[in-house]
Image (cartoon, rainbow, N blue to C red; front, side):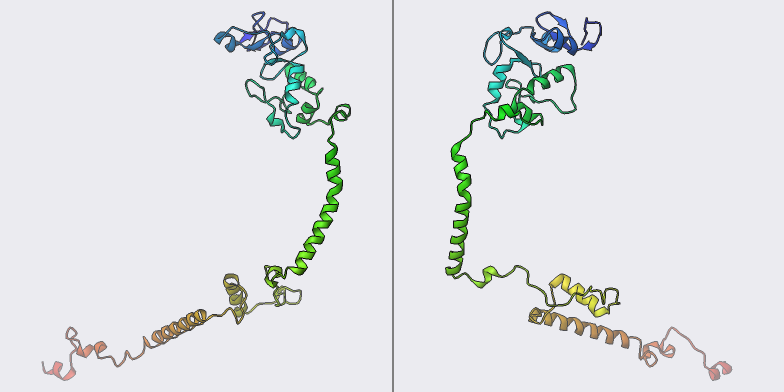
Length: 280
Protein backbone atom coordinates (compact mmCIF):
# COMPACT_ATOMS: atom_id res chain seq x y z
CA UNK A 1 0.00 0.00 0.00
CA UNK A 2 1.18 3.49 -0.79
CA UNK A 3 0.06 7.05 -1.32
CA UNK A 4 -0.31 8.45 -4.82
CA UNK A 5 1.57 11.73 -5.38
CA UNK A 6 -1.28 13.30 -7.33
CA UNK A 7 -3.42 16.07 -5.74
CA UNK A 8 -6.04 13.47 -4.86
CA UNK A 9 -3.62 11.77 -2.41
CA UNK A 10 -5.38 8.42 -2.66
CA UNK A 11 -4.12 5.31 -0.91
CA UNK A 12 -3.44 2.66 -3.54
CA UNK A 13 -1.73 -0.69 -3.99
CA UNK A 14 -0.92 -0.09 -7.68
CA UNK A 15 2.70 0.47 -8.58
CA UNK A 16 4.19 1.62 -11.87
CA UNK A 17 7.19 -0.56 -12.65
CA UNK A 18 8.69 1.91 -15.15
CA UNK A 19 8.48 5.08 -13.03
CA UNK A 20 8.64 3.24 -9.69
CA UNK A 21 5.87 5.22 -8.05
CA UNK A 22 2.51 4.41 -6.53
CA UNK A 23 -0.35 5.39 -8.81
CA UNK A 24 -4.10 5.57 -8.29
CA UNK A 25 -6.53 4.52 -10.98
CA UNK A 26 -7.08 8.10 -12.10
CA UNK A 27 -3.35 8.59 -12.68
CA UNK A 28 -3.16 5.15 -14.28
CA UNK A 29 -5.68 6.17 -16.93
CA UNK A 30 -4.37 9.71 -17.45
CA UNK A 31 -0.57 9.54 -17.10
CA UNK A 32 0.45 5.85 -17.13
CA UNK A 33 -1.69 4.53 -19.94
CA UNK A 34 1.09 2.50 -21.63
CA UNK A 35 3.13 1.68 -18.53
CA UNK A 36 3.52 -1.71 -16.93
CA UNK A 37 1.50 -1.46 -13.72
CA UNK A 38 0.95 -4.22 -11.21
CA UNK A 39 0.40 -4.44 -7.47
CA UNK A 40 3.03 -3.21 -5.06
CA UNK A 41 3.30 -6.72 -3.64
CA UNK A 42 4.16 -7.99 -7.12
CA UNK A 43 6.89 -5.36 -7.34
CA UNK A 44 8.36 -6.54 -4.04
CA UNK A 45 8.25 -10.14 -5.24
CA UNK A 46 9.72 -9.58 -8.70
CA UNK A 47 10.71 -6.17 -10.00
CA UNK A 48 11.51 -7.39 -13.53
CA UNK A 49 9.09 -6.34 -16.26
CA UNK A 50 8.75 -6.51 -20.03
CA UNK A 51 7.59 -3.58 -22.17
CA UNK A 52 6.55 -5.83 -25.07
CA UNK A 53 3.10 -7.16 -25.85
CA UNK A 54 2.82 -10.73 -24.53
CA UNK A 55 0.89 -11.85 -27.63
CA UNK A 56 3.00 -10.46 -30.47
CA UNK A 57 6.28 -9.81 -28.60
CA UNK A 58 6.44 -6.28 -30.01
CA UNK A 59 6.81 -3.03 -28.13
CA UNK A 60 3.66 -1.74 -26.47
CA UNK A 61 4.38 1.77 -27.74
CA UNK A 62 3.99 0.72 -31.38
CA UNK A 63 0.20 0.32 -31.30
CA UNK A 64 -2.90 1.10 -29.30
CA UNK A 65 -3.04 -0.78 -26.01
CA UNK A 66 -5.76 -2.06 -23.72
CA UNK A 67 -5.43 -2.83 -20.02
CA UNK A 68 -7.52 -5.70 -18.69
CA UNK A 69 -9.01 -5.71 -15.23
CA UNK A 70 -6.21 -8.06 -14.15
CA UNK A 71 -3.78 -5.19 -15.08
CA UNK A 72 -2.22 -7.08 -18.00
CA UNK A 73 -1.40 -4.68 -20.86
CA UNK A 74 -1.84 -5.87 -24.46
CA UNK A 75 -2.12 -4.50 -27.95
CA UNK A 76 -5.78 -3.90 -28.73
CA UNK A 77 -5.37 -5.35 -32.23
CA UNK A 78 -3.68 -8.48 -30.85
CA UNK A 79 -6.44 -9.03 -28.31
CA UNK A 80 -9.09 -8.49 -30.99
CA UNK A 81 -7.53 -11.07 -33.30
CA UNK A 82 -7.11 -13.51 -30.43
CA UNK A 83 -10.76 -13.18 -29.34
CA UNK A 84 -12.12 -13.53 -32.88
CA UNK A 85 -10.78 -17.09 -32.99
CA UNK A 86 -13.43 -18.15 -30.50
CA UNK A 87 -16.74 -19.52 -31.86
CA UNK A 88 -19.65 -17.13 -32.11
CA UNK A 89 -21.54 -19.19 -29.52
CA UNK A 90 -18.90 -18.71 -26.81
CA UNK A 91 -20.40 -17.59 -23.50
CA UNK A 92 -19.10 -14.39 -21.88
CA UNK A 93 -17.45 -16.47 -19.15
CA UNK A 94 -15.41 -18.24 -21.83
CA UNK A 95 -13.43 -15.07 -22.59
CA UNK A 96 -10.59 -14.94 -20.07
CA UNK A 97 -7.18 -13.34 -19.88
CA UNK A 98 -4.80 -15.52 -21.93
CA UNK A 99 -2.23 -15.43 -19.12
CA UNK A 100 -3.92 -15.39 -15.69
CA UNK A 101 -7.34 -16.77 -16.80
CA UNK A 102 -9.22 -13.98 -15.03
CA UNK A 103 -12.54 -12.89 -16.51
CA UNK A 104 -12.14 -10.57 -19.47
CA UNK A 105 -15.45 -8.72 -19.09
CA UNK A 106 -16.04 -6.68 -15.93
CA UNK A 107 -19.17 -7.12 -13.87
CA UNK A 108 -22.18 -4.93 -14.59
CA UNK A 109 -22.04 -3.19 -11.20
CA UNK A 110 -18.25 -2.76 -11.29
CA UNK A 111 -17.20 0.88 -11.76
CA UNK A 112 -13.80 2.58 -11.64
CA UNK A 113 -11.77 4.75 -14.03
CA UNK A 114 -9.82 1.75 -15.30
CA UNK A 115 -12.96 -0.39 -15.71
CA UNK A 116 -14.77 2.43 -17.52
CA UNK A 117 -11.90 2.78 -19.97
CA UNK A 118 -11.80 -1.00 -20.48
CA UNK A 119 -15.54 -1.13 -21.11
CA UNK A 120 -15.33 1.76 -23.59
CA UNK A 121 -12.54 -0.01 -25.46
CA UNK A 122 -14.36 -3.34 -25.60
CA UNK A 123 -17.47 -1.71 -27.04
CA UNK A 124 -15.63 -1.28 -30.34
CA UNK A 125 -15.75 -5.02 -31.14
CA UNK A 126 -18.86 -7.09 -31.74
CA UNK A 127 -17.55 -10.13 -29.87
CA UNK A 128 -17.04 -7.92 -26.81
CA UNK A 129 -20.40 -6.16 -27.16
CA UNK A 130 -22.14 -9.52 -26.99
CA UNK A 131 -20.24 -10.31 -23.79
CA UNK A 132 -21.15 -6.93 -22.30
CA UNK A 133 -24.84 -7.47 -23.07
CA UNK A 134 -24.97 -4.74 -25.71
CA UNK A 135 -26.52 -4.90 -29.20
CA UNK A 136 -24.22 -5.71 -32.10
CA UNK A 137 -23.01 -3.00 -34.40
CA UNK A 138 -24.79 -3.26 -37.79
CA UNK A 139 -21.77 -2.26 -39.86
CA UNK A 140 -19.71 -5.02 -38.27
CA UNK A 141 -22.42 -7.68 -38.37
CA UNK A 142 -23.04 -7.03 -42.07
CA UNK A 143 -19.38 -7.67 -42.87
CA UNK A 144 -19.47 -11.15 -41.39
CA UNK A 145 -19.15 -13.89 -44.03
CA UNK A 146 -22.22 -15.93 -44.82
CA UNK A 147 -22.33 -19.55 -45.88
CA UNK A 148 -24.62 -20.03 -48.91
CA UNK A 149 -25.18 -23.72 -48.29
CA UNK A 150 -26.94 -22.96 -45.00
CA UNK A 151 -29.62 -20.98 -46.86
CA UNK A 152 -30.30 -23.83 -49.23
CA UNK A 153 -30.59 -26.27 -46.37
CA UNK A 154 -33.09 -24.04 -44.60
CA UNK A 155 -35.30 -23.73 -47.65
CA UNK A 156 -35.26 -27.46 -48.29
CA UNK A 157 -36.12 -28.43 -44.71
CA UNK A 158 -39.92 -28.05 -45.08
CA UNK A 159 -39.85 -30.29 -48.18
CA UNK A 160 -37.97 -33.03 -46.35
CA UNK A 161 -40.27 -32.63 -43.39
CA UNK A 162 -43.37 -33.09 -45.49
CA UNK A 163 -41.84 -36.15 -47.16
CA UNK A 164 -41.00 -37.54 -43.77
CA UNK A 165 -44.55 -37.05 -42.56
CA UNK A 166 -45.97 -38.78 -45.63
CA UNK A 167 -43.55 -41.69 -45.25
CA UNK A 168 -44.48 -41.95 -41.60
CA UNK A 169 -48.18 -42.09 -42.42
CA UNK A 170 -47.53 -44.78 -45.03
CA UNK A 171 -45.49 -46.88 -42.64
CA UNK A 172 -48.11 -46.50 -39.95
CA UNK A 173 -50.80 -47.55 -42.38
CA UNK A 174 -49.10 -50.74 -43.58
CA UNK A 175 -46.94 -51.67 -40.60
CA UNK A 176 -49.82 -53.31 -38.72
CA UNK A 177 -49.07 -51.72 -35.39
CA UNK A 178 -50.57 -53.26 -32.30
CA UNK A 179 -53.57 -51.75 -30.61
CA UNK A 180 -51.58 -51.49 -27.38
CA UNK A 181 -49.25 -48.94 -28.99
CA UNK A 182 -52.03 -46.42 -29.42
CA UNK A 183 -53.86 -46.96 -26.15
CA UNK A 184 -53.60 -44.11 -23.67
CA UNK A 185 -51.41 -44.62 -20.64
CA UNK A 186 -54.19 -43.72 -18.23
CA UNK A 187 -57.59 -45.27 -18.78
CA UNK A 188 -60.54 -42.93 -18.58
CA UNK A 189 -62.79 -43.48 -15.62
CA UNK A 190 -66.50 -43.95 -16.22
CA UNK A 191 -67.41 -42.86 -12.73
CA UNK A 192 -69.12 -39.52 -12.35
CA UNK A 193 -67.46 -36.57 -10.76
CA UNK A 194 -67.84 -36.95 -7.02
CA UNK A 195 -67.31 -33.22 -6.53
CA UNK A 196 -69.89 -31.95 -8.99
CA UNK A 197 -72.01 -28.93 -8.22
CA UNK A 198 -74.95 -31.06 -7.04
CA UNK A 199 -73.19 -33.01 -4.28
CA UNK A 200 -70.18 -30.78 -3.70
CA UNK A 201 -71.22 -29.86 -0.16
CA UNK A 202 -73.20 -33.02 0.56
CA UNK A 203 -72.36 -34.98 3.68
CA UNK A 204 -70.64 -38.22 2.64
CA UNK A 205 -71.40 -41.54 4.34
CA UNK A 206 -68.65 -43.59 5.96
CA UNK A 207 -68.55 -46.14 3.13
CA UNK A 208 -67.57 -43.45 0.63
CA UNK A 209 -64.82 -42.30 2.97
CA UNK A 210 -63.49 -45.85 3.25
CA UNK A 211 -63.81 -46.29 -0.50
CA UNK A 212 -61.73 -43.14 -1.02
CA UNK A 213 -58.97 -44.50 1.23
CA UNK A 214 -59.05 -47.82 -0.63
CA UNK A 215 -58.91 -46.11 -4.02
CA UNK A 216 -56.01 -43.95 -2.92
CA UNK A 217 -53.97 -47.02 -1.99
CA UNK A 218 -55.09 -49.67 -4.47
CA UNK A 219 -56.67 -47.63 -7.28
CA UNK A 220 -60.28 -47.65 -8.46
CA UNK A 221 -62.38 -50.37 -6.85
CA UNK A 222 -63.77 -52.70 -9.50
CA UNK A 223 -64.70 -56.35 -9.65
CA UNK A 224 -61.59 -57.22 -11.65
CA UNK A 225 -59.25 -55.78 -9.03
CA UNK A 226 -60.61 -57.91 -6.17
CA UNK A 227 -58.33 -60.90 -6.54
CA UNK A 228 -58.57 -64.07 -4.50
CA UNK A 229 -55.82 -62.97 -2.12
CA UNK A 230 -57.62 -59.76 -1.25
CA UNK A 231 -60.89 -61.61 -0.62
CA UNK A 232 -59.14 -64.08 1.69
CA UNK A 233 -57.55 -61.27 3.67
CA UNK A 234 -60.89 -59.53 4.06
CA UNK A 235 -62.56 -62.75 5.24
CA UNK A 236 -59.80 -63.40 7.79
CA UNK A 237 -60.09 -59.85 9.08
CA UNK A 238 -63.84 -60.11 9.65
CA UNK A 239 -63.44 -63.55 11.29
CA UNK A 240 -60.89 -62.22 13.76
CA UNK A 241 -63.10 -59.23 14.45
CA UNK A 242 -66.09 -61.52 15.16
CA UNK A 243 -64.08 -63.74 17.54
CA UNK A 244 -62.81 -60.68 19.40
CA UNK A 245 -66.34 -59.33 19.89
CA UNK A 246 -67.61 -62.71 21.19
CA UNK A 247 -64.73 -63.09 23.67
CA UNK A 248 -65.14 -59.58 25.01
CA UNK A 249 -68.91 -60.06 25.38
CA UNK A 250 -68.67 -63.32 27.35
CA UNK A 251 -65.71 -62.29 29.48
CA UNK A 252 -67.83 -60.70 32.23
CA UNK A 253 -70.72 -63.22 32.42
CA UNK A 254 -70.99 -66.26 34.76
CA UNK A 255 -69.04 -64.72 37.62
CA UNK A 256 -71.92 -65.26 40.09
CA UNK A 257 -71.75 -69.07 39.88
CA UNK A 258 -67.96 -69.26 39.87
CA UNK A 259 -66.90 -71.38 42.96
CA UNK A 260 -63.52 -69.67 43.05
CA UNK A 261 -65.24 -66.40 43.87
CA UNK A 262 -67.33 -67.89 46.74
CA UNK A 263 -65.95 -66.52 50.07
CA UNK A 264 -67.16 -69.60 51.96
CA UNK A 265 -64.76 -71.79 49.99
CA UNK A 266 -61.76 -69.56 50.65
CA UNK A 267 -59.75 -70.92 53.66
CA UNK A 268 -58.25 -67.51 54.34
CA UNK A 269 -61.66 -65.94 54.98
CA UNK A 270 -63.35 -66.78 58.31
CA UNK A 271 -67.08 -66.18 58.51
CA UNK A 272 -68.85 -66.69 61.83
CA UNK A 273 -72.07 -68.70 61.84
CA UNK A 274 -74.86 -67.47 64.15
CA UNK A 275 -75.44 -70.75 66.01
CA UNK A 276 -71.78 -71.50 66.54
CA UNK A 277 -71.09 -67.97 67.67
CA UNK A 278 -73.75 -68.00 70.40
CA UNK A 279 -72.61 -71.34 71.84
CA UNK A 280 -69.08 -70.11 72.15
